[in-house]
Length: 464
Image (cartoon, rainbow, N blue to C red):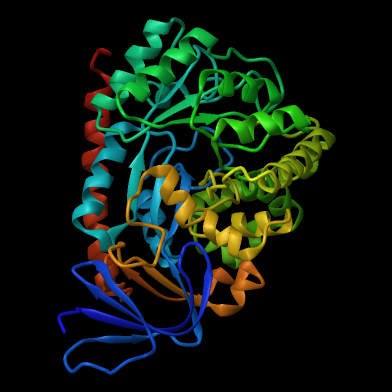
């Protein structure tokens, strides 16, 4: 017997289905060696984790994150070493062991990805896309502070050659995928520049030629139309207007993945109405600066009459915002019922949508009509498939030994997935003692500083 760890379970979700009955998960060298029916014999000298009475699931995969943000509504939020470090700590505590970084500074993403590969107890595995490819003045340049845009977190393109050059620049920075922004209207529903069909198609073709998946930021029917025309691999938001049956069929026939990100919009409204800026469940995950921003935004929202106050969606009629949220939820139901592969992702951190709260997006999906086991699948095996995380998102021989023990009642109420009893990361029980946590945070902080320096160096070089 050469296992390094044995987990005893009596209820597990293996990434595809729920399995009941006694089972022994044998772990060696950070991977699952075997999943054996029955508790079996104990083996002297081999640590045993008894997870019986809990639901054992693969580590969650948040396929849509922006980990440099702390949760402010203010678009001018600045990057903070402490905030980024806390984000990764909170994700691991919540059972998120892998993620997709869907737009950000390439140097920072690269540095953190390499740190967590070497030191998995410090943070999740990272799939990085680096800067978004977009139109000049298009999303997110329509709202992004100039100082941030100068770091190269968005690459504007006009011609097909611009698109190909941008993809090569993203790939040369060491990124794993390509994020394309196709958005014809802003969050305030004002017309904004959108990348043209020739440039968008060139982005997709160049990315595919270099073995990269293309993820598309899209919110409106015209965005979906262009994204499907040029052959993207994933649609990363639900649509804000009702989808026609023909569009539902096109999405299904295209074979794209679909990440709805329902909670980032629902939470903004619910958080204001229910005053989550006073809720300890949320406040414990953010800095005082973010908490003050929340309160200021809540008060501004409640005083702003019929329109959203200044911010990313400033000027949007509140009634239209509520309609958009309802449409996003209804479209999720249409696409999931049609069999489009749904992928869990939060778009956090923004406002009351936080990286340390996986339950919010999963609960939004359950409220919209998805069964809890299907919600779990979207956050494990399906997310792993989309991101190309071979050996993640499942409990099976050869898979990475990333496991989470949660309240078994989460199979009925997915909100209870927040009740995390233990996390196994790369085959080892996550030690959350204060001294160990402080050492891990220090290590992550060093990588954040190095990543910022790498970002500055990358931003000042000319595109090649």
